[in-house]
Image (cartoon, one colour):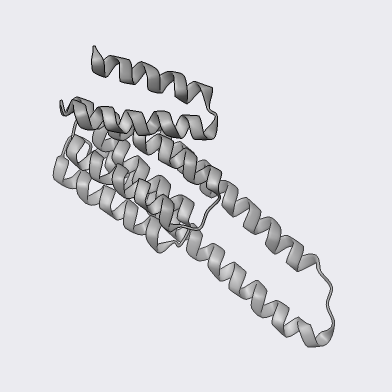
Length: 193
């Protein structure tokens, strides 16, 4: 549920910024030649916001269905796939990435670690594909490596788990994150225990 709240908060923030941009565009006074262009821009922005609003409603519906059907694997898989597809269709990379991350966390929660590994690997690979800031890519990779290590640990594939925890530690060093570094050392130590 917590990742779903993060998605909703992120999307709400994106909508607010778009609405503020639209308000700024509305307040700009322009000459008669550019009025037609401005009206078209306003219309395009409004259409985009309406489309985004309907997609968010679809995602919230699918998240609700995931929570309702969490005991029925087939239905849950269908709704999680729908969430990821909607996130991809919106063309908002952050929403798409959060949808993949949520799918992985839900799979972990229901002990379907093989499918969770697929989602987290997809999440990690898509972080590189999108043209986003380096710090966001690094934070995403840190989350992916940590969760991949946990999934492999639960599957009792300790060498793979250790490899991902080591990558997690390296990313913590690279980003100068003391909290993640300490957690990585702890997780690596548990693999050797």
